[in-house]
Image (cartoon, rainbow, N blue to C red; front, side, top):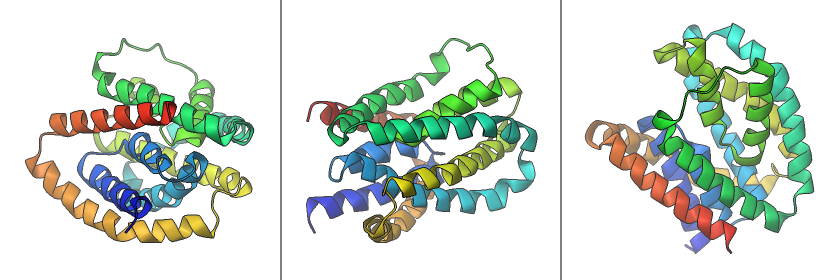
Length: 238
């Protein structure tokens, strides 16, 4: 097994662990990891079907807890943001996009690590939040921190928060599919890689459930932060 297949297997494992054991943050870790061994833009395509599959599994459980009003208010802005992200993704050369992805991985990794210490963000309109979410998600699959900053002031908590976030993610991923397909990021090569990753993804789900019961979330997040920063720096300067 060569280094590319090893990284693909590790990526699948991490997706399963983080989705099942620690509640997300997958894009900011796995997309840059994949970009170490395959073209950075192609890494976005590889992530999309796996993210959509995870959304579909999660929404079956969380559907009854959703707040459709909040989801609907974000959709117009997300549509605009996806279009802007689509144009940017097409315009940025592959080499520069690799460096952009590395820099954004570092930024969003640090934001995720220090989100509890961030100053209170004034509420913004649903359109503005949707645009920002759409652009960032198209370019990095890492819009979770933006969505969190928007949803918390809405007074959502617990299962309602998670359900609404999952539904927003599913709508956003569905919009991105058209952009990625047009840019050639969902071709046969992508599906072959996704199929190769499925066994380790399934193993990661079981391992994530076990780790959630036995491993400190704090130490897991610190290890992931170190990994994200190391990969981000590598992408920026390679």
